[in-house]
View 1 (tube, rainbow, N blue to C red):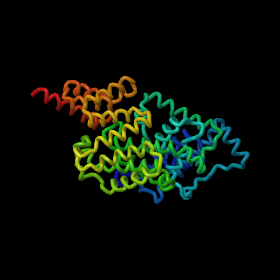
View 2 (view 1 turned 180 degrees about the vertical axis):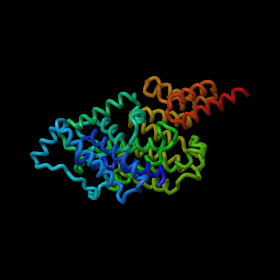
View 3 (view 1 turned 90 degrees about the vertical axis):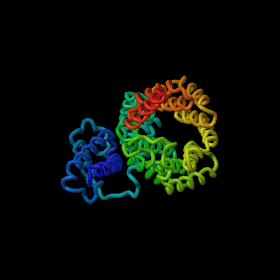
View 4 (view 1 turned 120 degrees about the horizontal axis):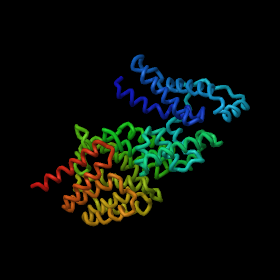
Length: 414
């Protein structure tokens, strides 16, 4: 097995094992530490000794042993849990790596992390860390807040769960319904990070996107009648269908209008279109359905020039009224520019910029640079491309933006 395969396997197994450990021990920070030790042990031993027959069971066994040792050596800190356990005739559980509840531990972990004492935003941040394996910086980027703020939020969420008397367990079906929206939002954010990584040398993290799709399929299998669940799965499929065409051989960014549409996954597109077409007939339309409908319009256009921008603008106009999200506002401005010209798009971006909500986000500057280029205001476009490049932690995006600025400088010199 290659180094990449080991890394991929461990990343896939980590949230599953964490879910199993948390169900037994309920101590989130300690469980995370135990999982990290198990992963380090696996990364050291498996390349040398081979992958065990049941890798998840192996990791669970090692992590459980670490938790057992910690419980035994930290009686004072665990007084409340130990006292309750003694009253119940508790015996430190031996690992049961062969057990299988029939449920997916990663999905269970997501529902468990949507813990009643937590705010929705804290629960979502915690899941992104535990399930998605995202860095604090990447989570902060998704929430449009400073990294230090997000670090404090995640730390407080773990502490709240530890101090809460609410059992850390898989919620019953009605509780799952109550936590569903948070779970869907987490899957959406994990997919987005997989589709366009917020930091690092790779434009995409295909493993994260694939895991988000896998989990969305599990939720859809349980709730096929929920139109927003279907909408989210459709959105992921329709967006991920373009993955092979989004970057070149040197990992360079290829924008949507320059992509080879022959590389798009037509099977995924067909499935996504079928899902969203059925979902839109079920009554109330939600944000994921609208975004999936927009993705479908893009995917069904034979060429970039065939894109039905008036329809996309209409869909974004509805979505903008439905959700207070600055990224939606930014995308609405792009659609408006494609229909009514760059001046209209720039006017809408100026209104968004005045709110300060995306002032330091690279996408605001990148989009403004693109619209200024459309308006043939090359100096302003160059400045905004450079400003965008300075604000992104993604190396492929930075290279693309700097290349755009250099290309326009070349045009100015003619």
